[in-house]
Amino acid sequence: MEKIVNDILREEVYYEKLQNGLDVYFMPKRGFTKKYAILATNYGSNDLEFVPIGEDKKIRVNEGIAHFLEHKMFEQPDGGDAFEKFSKLGVSANAFTNFTMTAYLFSATENFYESLEHLIDYVQTPYFTDENVEKEKGIIAQEIKMYNDDPDWNVYFNCLKAMYVNYPARIDIAGTVDSIYKITKEELYKCYNTFYNPGNMALFVVGDLDVEKVIDVTKKANNYDVDKLSKNIERFYPEEPANVKEKEVIEKFPISIPMFNIGFKDNNVGIKGKELLRKEIVTDILVGMLFKKGSKLYEDLYMQGLINENFGAGFSSQVDYAFSVIAGDSKEPKKVKEIILEYIEKAKKEGLSKEEFERTKKKKIGSFIKCFDSINFIGNSFISYTFKEINILDYLDIIKDVTFEEIEERLKEHFKEEYCVISIVEPK
Image (tube, rainbow, N blue to C red; front, side):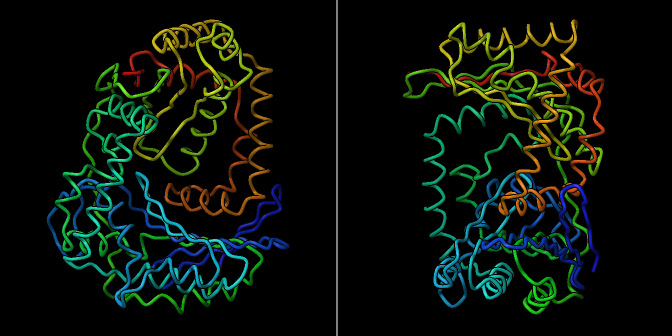
């Protein structure tokens, strides 16, 4: 067992790779009544083309299948539901699928070890039949229709569709009604057997618990046949050009004020580990300096009546794709975009404020340290960063080393008009 210590945070993480390939992490939090566990697979909605385990030819599966698979994992061979058992144990459980990851989690104040055993057990017990797959299609179709009626969801995904020409981040995580109705139990088993492979998964546990018992319960609950496990998964993603697909997308919804997402596509991709974490930190600081409430740009837009309090910005980053999005409400969203682009060009010519850089950096450090009071944040962040080959405990060392010059260089590299799109949802 390996022990990773961060003296600044005064936190430690225990790590062990099980014989079957599962990465197990445990962070003790003495005095915390709540405990948290998250079991995740490095598999999300972007993984549409791959070579299944035991085969030698690439296949393409239906869009939305990772999310569909997550839904189906709760149905058990005995007719029970995994959520029901969690409920009887008095714990709160959930699951989610995003572009790159599927995760199953629970938080508990009691019955933790029994709940951990149950979590591992049901995630390694798939049960798909023609009947239960058909039944699920109707449920997920309703969910998709609900999202299709949500202006927030549409303004965001239209922004991604405008930025990306080929990359599957432009595809809705849940797929379409047409695509999910083509999913079969055989296709689900192929995806499950390939990606729900412990060598492609990680477990993170956090709380006031005994490390030896956490590892022991995890080992006993794992029942995979080690000899049948594939160590490497061949995945294929379409080549993505640097250019955006379209500069503007407008859709009409029954709303009172237009909503917008302004996206900047990032072409500095294909990196992982500490290099990727540094890029994320640098860009987060830059985005904060430019767009946070209280910034000059925000105040100018607000005083002109072009935005309201529903204004914000963020940077989203994975190994193979990344983008920044500025979102808000405005009666003149195109004017907002125009002013933002002018402001960015002015900042490139005249330079950013070094004092603002130091303030923003200091605030980011404080926010990060405070987040370690949340076991949900610790679990979710640690496991998602693990799949990017990042140790989140490296965050403070890297952010302290970030220079003002890096921020100015990143401004010139990332915020370019040619890679900028706008998605607008306006009143019917």
